[in-house]
Length: 299
Ligand code: NDP
Image (cartoon, rainbow, N blue to C red; front, side, top):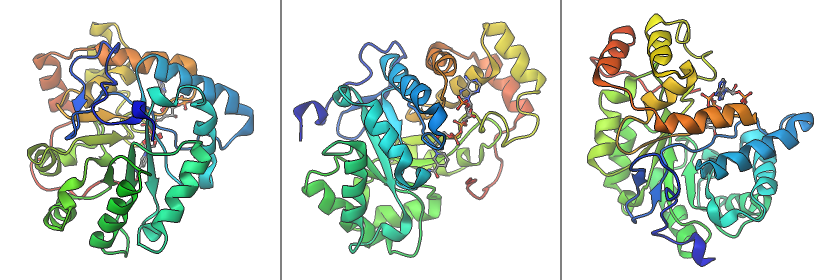
């Protein structure tokens, strides 16, 4: 494994975005990364998608998230092409299907992802969602991959509080280094107990769909007067406000997907936006935080 890909890297350097998020092993990550779901699906957009990802890395969004599921490996192959020559600058995340997360399949799934990505190790390998394989078996598989040098760390995705408590109670469960869950201004359920539980246990949360899939996941989000007024006041676009809002928490990383260079530039700039207490209070009135346990939203 290359040294540049080792622990204790500070990938937030040269990224003027505040403190970044420190992982348990000391690695510091910028608070904005890049999603890739549906990238690689349309051959005609491939070149622009690759340019966008490379620009995102240049602008500091060094974490790239993917999954074996995305386009049946097409997204991983596209990323493999995009990171040629810049692998050491990138923090690479992939996810294993739940039905591949047992001891019988996980090593092969990981090898296939590595091959498509053109690298010898992943920085994060996540269980995509909980399936029928016992969590303890997935942990063992992940730990073996770590020992083999194929992954640096592992984590989970779409696990709600009860699942997280179970995970942490299992042998090596506390090695879990991240939970990737849906989080945006229009879907705040995790703030009730999942986010506090993660924060108390030193587990960063990676927010997926931080732009509510360009607003489509929540009716009225982009038409909201509060969102539009506050964005105007800061001289930013509503999408930038959504990102700034997401990463206002310590230890929350957001991974917007953008496949045009203009969108990438806007998203990267959102890391510099500081929302005031008055802004946050107004957004709370428009999109109230949860007052009771909500089931975890997934897409
Ligand atoms: P996002 O909330 O990131 O929204 C993506 C959409 O927003 C795209 O249509 C994109 O358009 C558009 N967009 C991006 N930036 C801008 C901008 N500045 N202005 C206007 N529109 C913009 O949705 P995703 O579902 O992609 O979620 C992000 C990532 O999270 C995924 O790509 C994936 O990596 C991960 N994910 C993980 C899941 C899990 O189960 N663990 C589930 C879902 C997502 P365009 O592409 O044209 O730029």
